[in-house]
Amino acid sequence: MYMAERIRKNMDKIPEPTLRRLPWYLSNVKLMKEKGEKYVSSTQISKQINIDASQIAKDLSYVAVTGRTRVGYEIDRLIQVLEDFLGFTNLHKAYLFGVGSLGGALLRDSGLSHFGLEIVGAFDVNPNLVGTEINGIPIYHSSEFESRRQQDGVYIGILTVPINIAQEITDKMVEGGICAIWNFTPFRIRVPEHIVVQNTSLYAHLAVMFNRLNETIKK
Ligand SMILES: NC(=O)c1ccc[n+]([C@@H]2O[C@H](COP(=O)([O-])OP(=O)(O)OC[C@H]3O[C@@H](n4cnc5c(N)ncnc54)[C@H](O)[C@@H]3O)[C@@H](O)[C@H]2O)c1
Image: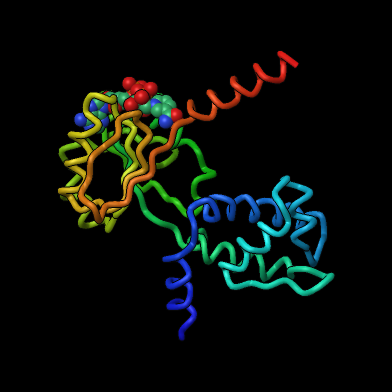
């Protein structure tokens, strides 16, 4: 079986919690490399991020790397395999819809490209924004989306428009050929089955933090 085929096969089965933990391992392993380490064990990673070592070994077995007894994983190889597997080594082009306070902040975030996401264009209707650029990313009028998408070959859309037009813009994206939507609006957008949707909320994490904080203060 070819490598790509094997990875795709594993990818079908890989549990979502594992996928969410892998970038975390990657960041920590990179940190250890910076400190001059050549090898890292699941026990060492476990100490850094407080996840069970056996869980880490299990998660890493999905990316087809196995550690050697006692020495652990070779750091350079682990980083390379994780980056390839997570798709962080090739940049995935994306468009952003709605250059407001959140959309603008995402355009300014240069960290996204380290995780394989390259925003190549943004769309808005505000005449003060259309025709300008942020962080070198051009802002176009929303009506230009369909014609631009074909020539740019973009399949990912980031949704940061006001909630009341979230579904309308989603429909427009899907009709125009977008296949994956990173939805920051609190609206549960409806899409055809083959479209990938990831809902992200900073506020959900805040609720967890406040709740845990209250428990700590009470003790
Ligand atoms: N997930 C999170 O953690 C999180 C955090 C902040 C905001 N949000 C959500 O993100 C969205 C944007 O919030 P904000 O504070 O940046 O709002 P905002 O009002 O600052 O920005 C919205 C932008 O959308 C633009 N817009 C309006 N109609 C449009 C159209 N047809 N096509 C393209 N762009 C259009 C507006 O001109 C504006 O620039 C909201 O739905 C908000 O609830 C989510």
